[in-house]
Image (cartoon, rainbow, N blue to C red; front, side, top):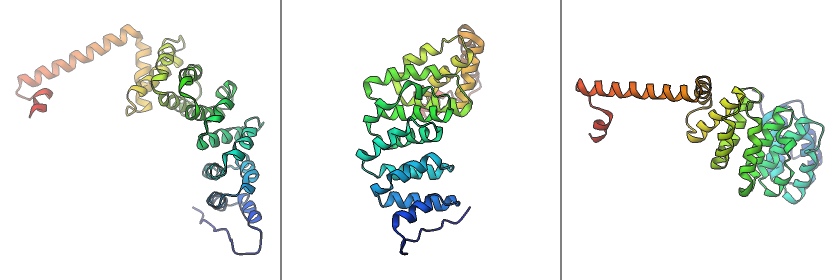
Length: 258
């Protein structure tokens, strides 16, 4: 890993110029240090530079530090400037603007997240919009947001689906009805994704891949087949418990009393 090169703050070059130059340096470690410096010493004069760099920065960690630096500036000047990026023709600019808004956490930005953003053709923009929306949505609109998010079930690769599931899980009980309806969708991919998300909502420790596998099994068997399979599994488990009792091995209930 490249060594972090500190920014020289003792020479005669104006501080703003030094940091601005470092933000566009070839070495990502220098850019990261520059973003850290800008955030550690908040200066409204850096606003434009930080926003512009968000749209051009290729390194994820540097972009995240740039967003952090923006959260250190007064929201009264930061929010209007970041809002303009939501209409940018550059996907990275839109995505990072949404990420920054989620980090700022000012609920006034909720009104700026549109249906088009939640359905953006670019997966990264859509994923970031989902996360930002869940952070900013008012309590009374959580169910409506869930209704919108379930329209994206079955979309994209594993990472995209995982992001959507996490967003819906974070909505808690507000997503229950929407997921129940989506579970009956005729498209198996949508139905399985909805069921997997509901399993995660009920048991966050289950793990996404395990939830998907179980959901696919249920969809493949159909409701009646899944119920029969569950009954068979329960019966076999009961038989094993009886056998354990007969050979002198304590049952789970007996063990619990010990």
